[in-house]
Structure formats: C-alpha cells, structure tokens
Image (cartoon, rainbow, N blue to C red; front, side, top):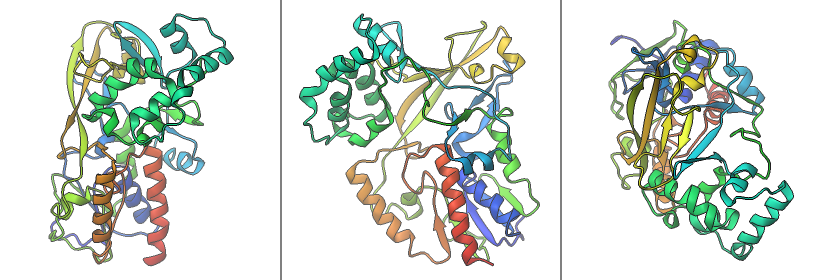
Amino acid sequence: MSNYKPDILIVGSGFYGTVLAERLANVLNKKVLIIERRKHIGGNCYSETDKKTNIEYHKYGTHIFHTSNQKVWDYINRFTEFNNYRHQVLSNIKNKVYQMPINLETINTFFNKNFSPVEAEKFINNKTKKFKNYKFKNFEDKAISQIGKELYNAFIKGYTQKQWGKKPKKLPESIFNRLPIRFSYNEDYYQQTQYQGIPKNGYTSIFKNLIKNKNIKIKFNQSYKLNYKIKPKFLTIYTGPLDSLLNYKFGKLEWRSLKFKYEKKKLKDFQGTAVMNYPELKKKYTRIHEPKHLHPEREVFKSNASLIIKEFSVLNDKEPYYPINDENNRIKHRKYKLEANKIKNFDFGGRLADYAYYDMDMTISAALKKFETIRKKIK
C-alpha cells in the first residue's frame, strides 16, 4: 500500500467520499485511495451488530434514509435494498407519551381537547397571533410564533437546550425550520418524502458495495494533514472539518457531539418504537433508541432481548456531529472556505467540510454533482 500511486486521494469514508470514489473508479477508471481516521468505513452512518443480542444498531445514532430525489434513489438502490420502515418519533413528557412532530393528536392530548383539523389550526393561530410580528432573530422567537408558548415550553425548549448546549434565544431561528407542525393525525415523521426505509443489510454493507472495485483502496486509522505523505496524480478531496485542516487559523468552529450509553434488556420490547424523545431538563439524555424496531422484517425482532441506547448531547469538536451554525461560526467558516480554495489540486465537500447539517440524500446528491464537475476537468 505504501507504494500505491493513486490518481485521486479522498479523505473520509462517509457517503460523500465513498460515492465520489465509486464514480471515479467505475466511470472514469481512476485509481482512488481513501484514508479514514477511524477504524471503520461509513462515517457516522456506520452500523454494526451487538454480539449479545444479535441486534444491528447505528453506532452514531439512528439514521433513517429518506428522499424525494429520484436520481439519488435510483443511484443508492444499486448498492442496497430497503425495507418498508416508516419513521415515527414520540416524546415522553412527565411519563406521558405524545406524537412528534406536533400533530393533531399531540394538540388534542396536550390541551385535553377534541379539535377537528380546522378547529386546531384556529386554536393555535389564536395562541401565536401576538407573536407574528417577531423578527425571528433567534430560535425561541421563531418557535413561539409558530406553536405558542405552551407547546414550545413542553416539547421544544428543554430538548433544544440539551441538544445544543445553549439557551434557545442564543440559537439561529433557521434551526426551527426542521420542526413542522401538522393539523392532521399523520404520524409519519417524513410525510413529505417519497421514499423511506432502512437498508435491509444495514448501512455498512452499502459502503462496502460502493467501494467494491479493484481501483479503490482504503486505509484506516489515518489522519490527514496538508503535507500527507501520499500525493495523488490529480486531486485530493477532503471531507473533514476545515478548521482543523488549517490549524484553527481563524479559531475553532463550534460543534455539538453525541455520547451513548448502551443497555441490554431481557424483554421483547422496551418502548415500542425506534426513537423516544425526552425534552425535560431533569433527564440528562435527549433520546432513547431501540434499534430492533428498525428491522421488523428480521427474525431477531421477535426475540426476547432488546438493546436500548441513551443519547447524550455534548460539546466535542473531536467527534463533530452538528454545526452550531450561528453568525459567528458562519463568518469563520467562510474564511476557511476562502483559504481552502487557494490550495492547489484540492477540493472539499460534505457535511463536515461545508459546516452544514445534511441529510444522507443531500450528501449523496452533492457528491454526484461534484463528480460531474470533476469529470470535466479530469480525462
């Protein structure tokens, strides 16, 4: 491997890096070397099987594949099949369970009403109309203007503070755009998405299939610096954070990270769903995952054993998950992008490099577009 002379060097083996590697190797017949700082492929989408319960779980938090992008759907289905899982999220408040996102059932249960859709919408509009003139300068203002103070305080405020480690007033209003409110009984978390499911053979199998080409080599436990010993013929594509790459020249970008606590349960079903939210501040964890629910088609779903995973949000730039995308961090990131663009034979992209929260389909789409740009430059 030390004598391997790649045409392209790719840093990172998540979806962005491996999709690019697959296209470069299979379409352009280029030799690609992927280096990965972890000991496994797949980035934060990596899945593995718990040896004791035989339940496959997502090591870095539950990942649901969903998209309405036909090109992405057609592409990814070349490397996996999906089951028929439809994602539902519930929220446990004062030991009572509610639907999330907030829908007609949530509103009726929380306020002890029996509204029709029209009545519920009018009810919420009455609670929010005095906040409609807010300029939406922060997350809390935006949330209250959409759902009112009662629902915000119960379902959103504590969860957001735990998730981001900041008071919601200190967060950008754009974060709330991911949290819809519905005036129907639709419980599907991704109701607007055309395609949805979990890979039948797990996420890790997708990445193995993506790089199943003799022209693709991968090295694990490898960190990248600009003076990395292997120089590719054409191009280096970097998918990690730009601040660490450039030695924090403009200061550190802020990230939220996650920690997990695993528990084995000698019972068939612990919580009845794959993900349960815990918004109250007295609960230190934000969610509990029960991954056997992701694969109801598997025989292990019927077993009298379950694995639960408690998720804790922490500040940790060594394992970045979510960018704290406020104005100060956006300014820093723009400076890093300008600096990185000056590097010869170098490109970057993906969730970490772009300092953005991308869903998996968005990352795949971005990688496919980047490939089309690269192929015009490389013959």
